[in-house]
Length: 321
Image 1 (tube, rainbow, N blue to C red):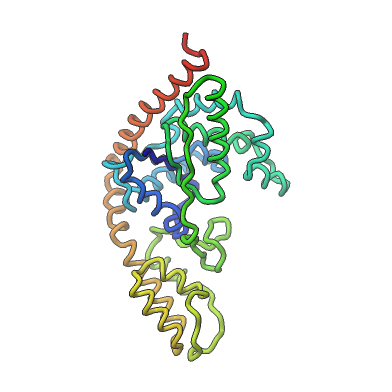
Image 2 (cartoon, rainbow, N blue to C red):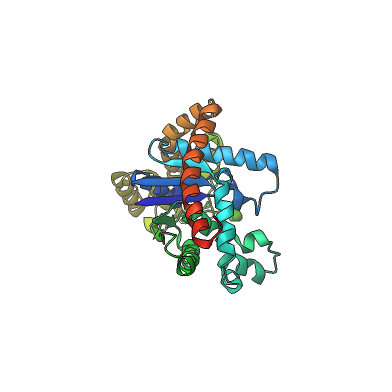
């Protein structure tokens, strides 16, 4: 089984990114073959600063490697280093119905809000389809809000296959576990859009300050409380084993505690959980040549695979004499 996953380098990764997606992506790297790419072409629809794009792309690579993505098991590369994907996008674009793209969520949402949408956003699903099809991907892990893009990919691949023969593998979506939805510091879903995030590798002192500022209710200390309904308990549960969760739940139900104690326990657990990754990241950041080598080696392998698929598509539709 071949797995493919891409992540946009549009900002520093936070707890929600990790537990909601990245952790599950990395768990799939032990499959027969896994491709992971930094989707900087997609990010170009929102980032217009060249230095920022370069910085965020490198930071994303450092984060993924520090968090456990193993270049000996998975292929890690930068999307723009694979020009075959852009060419494949055009082949797909020529057979993409306009109405299909008009129905895609990202474009519709912007249009309904009166926000201008450029051609990059409008055709975003076609580039995503090319990303997937270029590596004969069998499985693509996505959140439930991204399933439509996999359906579009299957539609485009199916239409191309109908016209020109069996060229593309039709991928399947692997919907990520909804239980990993991570609340932000305000109780809403953790998202950069809501300004309620805690970054994975921000300074420990800053992380602890954010935790200590999480708002809580005004119930008396002595009152028992239901843990599953509490934001601090939900966050704490991400970082500890079942025994520690049970102990904390018992504390809630007994009452007689202060939220400050829970916040300290949460900050301690988060610091300990990411400490090994933080150490690995510092070592990688001190050796940028190694990171560039990993990305270069990954791109070389990805180009070979994407080149094979592109040539197959070109032959099928008559672009190769």
